[in-house]
Length: 115
Image (cartoon, rainbow, N blue to C red; front, side):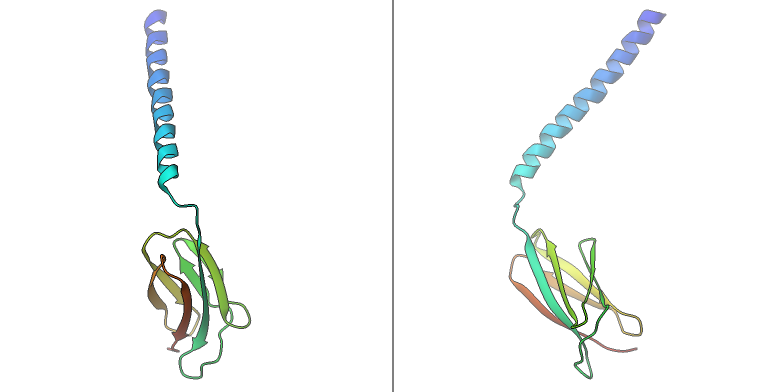
C-alpha cells in the first residue's frame, strides 16, 4: 500500500514539475519574440467648449491608469501591440473612448464634453 502511495505521489510530482519546466521554456521563447521597446503616449485633455485644460482626468490604456496634471497633460508608457483603446473620464463629463495605433508616434489632444 505504501509503495503505491509513493508511486502515485512521485508520478504526480513528476507531471507537475515537468509541466512547469516546459511552461518555463515556452515563456522564455515567447519573451524573446516580444519587443522590449516601450511606446510613450502623451496627450492633453481639454474641455470641448471652452478649450480649458482639465486636471484630474482618468486615462486608462491596457490596464494602466494615470491622471492628467494641473495643465491637463498625461504620459503613459506601454509596449506596442498594434491598436488599442484609450479611455478618458472625468466626473460631469462624457467618457471619451479613442482608438490609437501604438506603433506610431502618439501625441493626443482629447476634448471632453460636459453632460
